[in-house]
Image 1 (cartoon, rainbow, N blue to C red):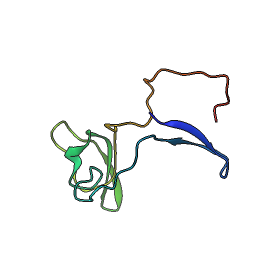
Image 2: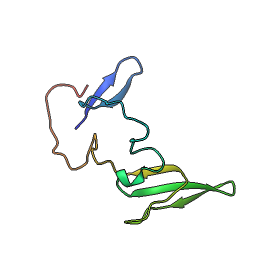
Image 3: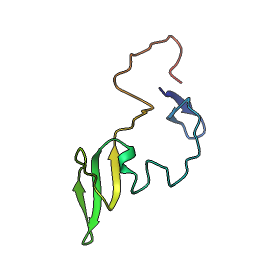
Image 4: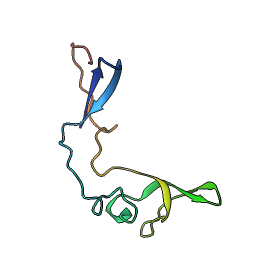
Amino acid sequence: MGDMRKDYVSERFMIVTKKEDKIIDPKKSPFAPGNESMTNPSVLSLVAKDGMLQRLQDNEDEYVEGWAIRVFESKNPIVSIDTENSYSDRPFY
């Protein structure tokens, strides 16, 4: 899980993951068009048709093609609502 930290330059809180980012080959990236099967089914897919955005959603074995925006649950989430809360006497930042 990620940690919440305060950025004193921007005066905002941010979520920082402990995992190291890996450089992904664009052909193997699960975020690239055509690689939809590498991710969970989309919760929301926006497809541009006739100058408008149409809202679509993936089925179990059929993925929306030609999307402009695609939203799906991460297989490795940084944060989760299912984690146990931890409390401390120290400040949150």
